[in-house]
Length: 438
Ligand code: TNX
Image (cartoon, rainbow, N blue to C red; front, side, top):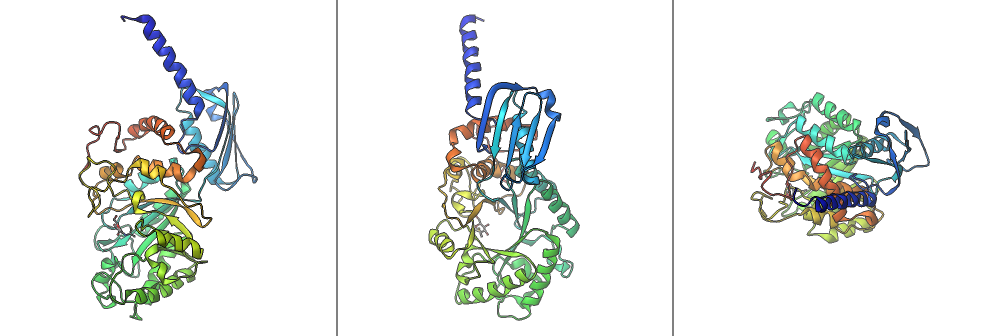
């Protein structure tokens, strides 16, 4: 070593810097709301000594962690809060030193979602479980599962087995995944997209079609078939919601046809005990605002969001710009959205997106459409780390969001993603994980 004094100085500076930056926050994603740490350190040998108590004064999904020198006390009002405290502790315990103190935390939004389209390409249950693991880690709690589209129908319906012709989930597999999600406090919301995007259905029931991709709302025989399907789905998915699609039907007369369809179809969903969710294209169908959720995705139609909130619909926010993960995140990528290959949805845009303060906003969601996602590797590449940024945005109070600070914590998190072999897009070194084109 040529300059021993200099290098000693450098390592002292680095040590000092690490201490300061650790004091600025904790290496946890999403950033907790309030962190008060002291100089005292917790002895990690005592990680097994965690006491959990129920505290009804805390908000739903919230928790409080008191770290003493030799033991930890976790307070939460529900099981989800306890689970989230465990996620926070797991991330904290990876640091060399754990400080004593108090962490108080609760989510900004009740709806913190991710949508996976398995109709365009079928990724399979092992991949889905990996995604659910990571969703739980980052405190996401809604898994919206797009299970039908023009390209395929992916959920077994016992009354109509002919609907599934390619790869699909048996009802037993669906139950297994729903249970797996529930262990991570994630509610699964299946989507059967109608009246458009329905080729997989109309191929099976040509007599119920109007054109190639749409069902015929005027055909009386359509509704009993859909009702049977809804009833099976309602029994299969114990969650509160059923997403009934409603996007992208255009053309002569469709406004009235869609209105008739949505009213009758959603009434059946409600009768089966579920709350229907529709894409914001169906806003004009004027469904009951007390029994329907609007899912706003058309970033190029801000007036649609405005109207949904004004009418008083509870609304989920996932504008394609920037919350759609099928769009590329780096100009150097080759395969993005089907038509707008070069349109970039950067992680910084997701993190910095300006959200409405309206009380009817239930929360936010990122969506992965899979027209161009065939492998689990490409799924990883498109979803991570952007979904982690979305998770922080969904959980952490606006006043605590700081992109630079997020990037520093993400730096630590990469170590974890590497350890479980997630093929994420690495913005620090573009060539480290080359873009998988399928
Ligand atoms: C629009 S979002 C769609 C999907 C496509 C997606 C591609 C929505 C409700 N409909 O069918 O896959 O764009 O980004």
